[in-house]
Image 1 (cartoon, rainbow, N blue to C red):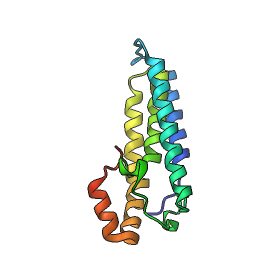
Image 2: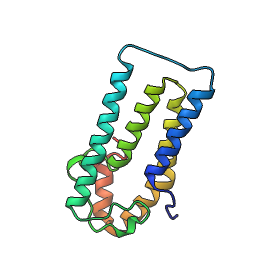
Image 3: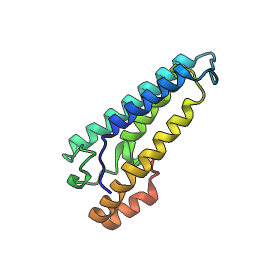
Length: 150
């Protein structure tokens, strides 16, 4: 299966769906003390995790192109990749969760879950198949030691 949609665009589409749901669904609104602060923390963590993972790719001189994962030249397993096999996608999810909190509609958690499901099926699984083919046993061991998301 060939990846066709850049993950950042996927996140923006799901974020747009969150906005539409919040705007037009008359139920599910919530608020609690510290909601905006928590959203800010999640947003900051998402940006930080994403930035660190991008820096690790750049410093290891391997591709950042999610549409052509076969261009990968090195398997990165240290730093944030020691805790998550997909920290860039985790960063995008945290940004979406922050948006969901800012909008204050409980049903946005379903859209965030839909993002995870979509990414697993259409982005991560094809990447994993390619990485297993390219890096073999080394990647297989890494998968056993490190969770997909967190």
